[in-house]
Length: 131
Image (tube, rainbow, N blue to C red):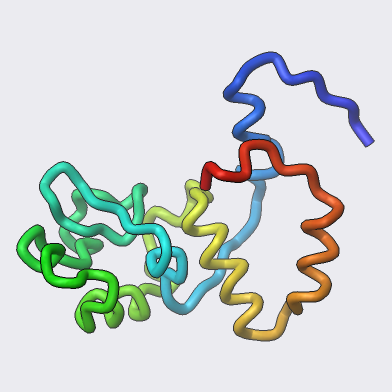
């Protein structure tokens, strides 16, 4: 195990050698958008921070965000329709992509909650309140 001394806040928040690896994320539905609500300065709800201001990834217009946006049927169907194969920004491995990949593995029974909880117990998370 390598001992690491953190030199800056940036290093505390990002362990780049793990986050930007050669993983190939896979998901059927951008699951992270169910609990990460991204709103641009234009007032529109977008699928993710990495796809903000791209019309193809707008979930709701600013007018639609005023009317109970979390359970808007159009928003939910757009989230479910996004698959990793055609999601162009997936190469940046942002948190939403990683969350969607992990949730898809749970859905597909490629990992189970018990083994995931054991792995998480062994990890030391810094600033857990920051997604």
